[in-house]
Length: 322
Image 1 (cartoon, one colour):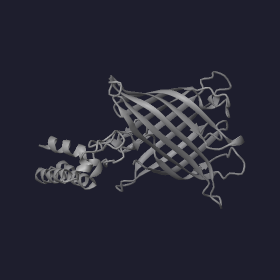
Image 2 (cartoon, one colour):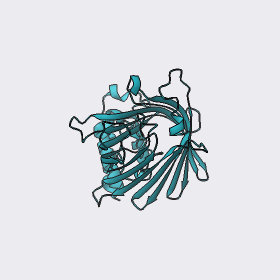
Image 3 (cartoon, one colour):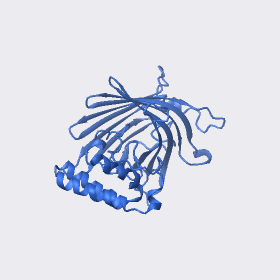
């Protein structure tokens, strides 16, 4: 009976917010073990969907407006991968989920300011989301995603509070679910990174990358290699000497805490060796449901505007899961 109801909802949910709310109530009752009320709300949800007008009922759904009745996909690449797979993950009408970590660090402190005129105390935040576009088009259970990440450095201690730098990173990637021992998935993608400025401050580069996901109990490892796409008009031809040819991210879960370490390196075995280390600690704030976040960065290419300047910075704030 439940399968029939879910099938009916799958056709109509995109146009029936009320039906979706009833279905969510049913799921909550079912998880709580209240079968009687769960069945009652499943029936109400189905009846609500069937009462929709023929105009809406006959419209077909595409991948962009389809509503997923299951839990949203867990984060492949962020510190909060396991947390996003919890049972209380809300339903997402746009089928959008986090790509990398979403956070705000109201206070960051740098031991040295690379560019003169800026304060060494500022606010940093990052927004990162992904949306599936196509599924199983190669018959390998793969998914094509569009992702977008924006990282900004905000001089909130300045009187006029200007944005010192913002980096924008749209990308397309294909995710292949795997089950070869510890290898759980692989991604191939293309990404563009730019600071959106012109003239002497313009910085950008395009890359093709391959990334893997290895899981060993509570430890997840994400190695990534990239190849820079050559450009005729290059604002930063030596960026690979500082940002490297790839990175590797380690994420370890301890109870409700998450520790991560991300490394980059240009693999030069001489005095031109450059790279970076980013450490993160995610921790619950009592039982409030909020998570604190401490981030430490040491190295090169934290932002595009100062990719060739060494940065030593620590920040404190909050991680935003959804």
